Amino acid sequence: MAHNPLAPEWLSPPADANTLADGLWPATAQRAEDGAITIGGVSAPDLAARFGTPLYVVDEADVRTRAADLRTAFDTEFARIGTSVRVYYAAKAFLSTDIARWMVEAGLNIDVCSGGELAVALAAGVEPGRIGFHGNNKSRAEIDQATRVGVGTIIIDSPIEIERVAEAAVRNGVVQNVRLRVNSGVHAHTHEFLATSHEDQKFGVVFEDAPALVAAIRAQPSLAFLGLHCHIGSQIFGVDGFAESASRLLTLHTELLAGGPVPELNLGGGFGIAYTSVDDPTPARRLAAGLADIVAAECASRGIPVPVIAIEPGRVIVGPAGVTLYEVGTTKPVRIGENTRLYVSVDGGMSDNARPALYGAEYSVRLADRVSDAPAALVRVAGKHCESGDIVVNADYLPGDVAPGDLVMVPATGAYCWSLASNYNYLGRPAVVAVLDGGARVIVRGETIEDLLARDAGVSDAAHEATATRSTDNMKETTR
Ligand code: LLP
Image (cartoon, rainbow, N blue to C red; front, side, top):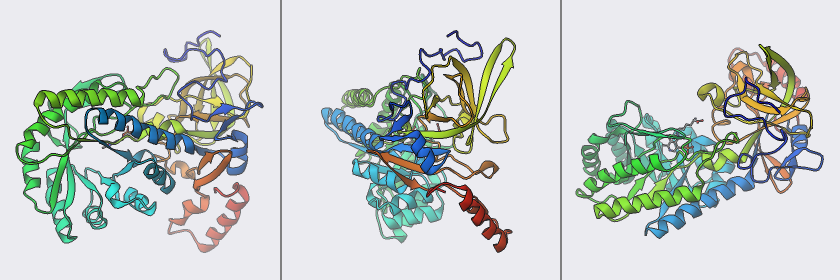
């Protein structure tokens, strides 16, 4: 099939528009004999029939394996250089109590960045000592709660916080472990990194200010300084940005050793994943090996002991293990000059995946209920919101006979989709279903119209009752 000039440069027409590209789909995703996609042994049509669409589907085995494999990779590579690693799952990527428990069972800790995320982790039964608390504007109440419940570490993000955390620790009778988030000046984007000497952004403290701030932390008897923290960005491929950042941090780390112990170094998260067939992220094992080599070399050249390393990956653990299932409502060929793009509108959109609208993120799509040998057509999957930027998949090829009633699946939606979901246009946020070994269960139920009206103080009891009746009539099984 010829390249459609309306397609972006990177997108080539596929040999077969039914193929599930390697590295893009959950580990258990495959085509069944009838052509439908199955995940965790459950077919897309079954999921749609039982739980409705749109639907977030998470491959439980894949999430657990990704978490465990990442931990093993980092454990092994850093053991090689004589130290250990604490892996914190960045809960902002996707958090529910089940997911928190899967992480703990895989030996990970949890990084939270709000009282809400902390509450979910605690509700999951995560031992507070395994939790790291982030945020550039933690409220006094959040700091108080974090110290009271005994979170393992608080990451100090500004000079003002030193006293706030110290006071809360005194009030709650604890000595609080803290890290100091610094701005290394390294900013990584997918394929390159940028190193600046000064950073104009809200996170972390200015690099040069760190020694004085660490001295201030050490002067507080209610605080125990663990080490520096730095997060250089997200969706990063390769190790160069991490290498530059680790090198800068270890210079500072070495300077701080003169004033007292610095047992740990936290290199943050940001490991990238594939969203399209041309994305080629660095595998976890190679990242771990690369980072370990850099840390070992930088420590050796400075003559300092290798600290305990902490990392905070989010996307790489849950992103590829999740998909979103939609039903097609309308299709519409749109001619632009000589060429045609087929708009395929689905029953969700920017409320369940804000990333294309927010970041221009690219995704991929496949028919989920059947295969077809119809010639492939360039499609744009649009949502149902009243906004032209409401795009789910900017460009991919689907069999050209895609039609209303078809199910389509978008892979790699496990991170920053559910967690960024909204109620724009009063759409309810979809349910999350975990699939495993042929079974499917709701781990977060979807929102009903009733849920959406529940907070509106002007809705009468009679209107609530009428909506309740209507919404049970309209909605599927247990999710809504
Ligand atoms: N640690 C810190 C301090 C962070 O700020 C973040 C992400 C992470 C760890 C985890 O990064 P990950 O490994 O998931 O890349 N909403 C954006 C991503 C924002 C990331 C914010 N911080 C997106 O959808 O691309």
